[in-house]
Amino acid sequence: MGTNTGNGHRKGQQKDRYQQENLLTKLFDLFDGNGNYLRSKKSEGKFKGVETRKTKKPPRG
Figure (cartoon, one colour):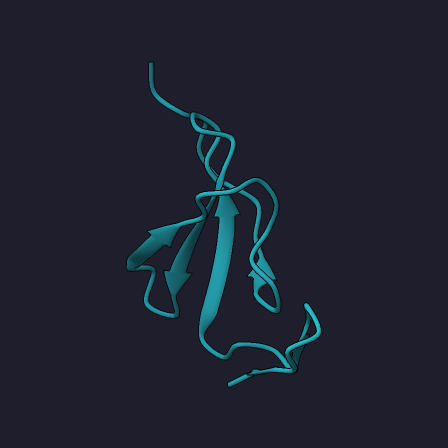
């Protein structure tokens, strides 16, 4: 597990986590290693220290 430094960045990567951009909301969603949804980012940008994956399906609607 990564640790916060207090200087606006993280030292190390968060294990068993990944993020994908939600094409409907244009924000990033966080998932655990099993693919379970954890939360969405409220502000713009990516989560720090989390692997980014591309979305596989286009959004519905």
